[in-house]
Length: 159
Image (cartoon, rainbow, N blue to C red; front, side):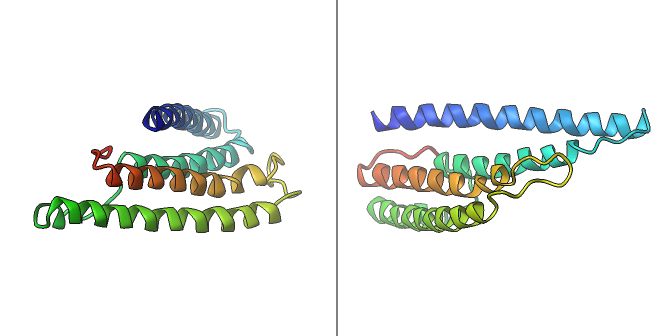
């Protein structure tokens, strides 16, 4: 049941990331075309590309935790008993959840400070950019706790 919910969230996040990457690439391609072909650069494309890029990086970070595609050393995996490896992986996942909590709290403070601020070129609310950090933090907590749950239950992780 829990895995199914997280699988659905994973698919939704992947769709959002792909959509944002396509949007970012389209905005940057249009910027290049307007700058070099029409000799009339756009004022808004770089701001929107930065907004999309920030969300892509942070959402992809959370997906990397869920799918264990983040950088890690697996030296001990073959040397230690499986129960110890599961314990260590669980502790690492708890540390990641702790970082997610820190990112959530700090990100909420930062997003709150940016309320009322707007971007320079197109005046979108800066909170749209800054709320990406606490969203990533919450996702890190959820996905890391899922990893802990899987380690406790002896289930295979999403490696």
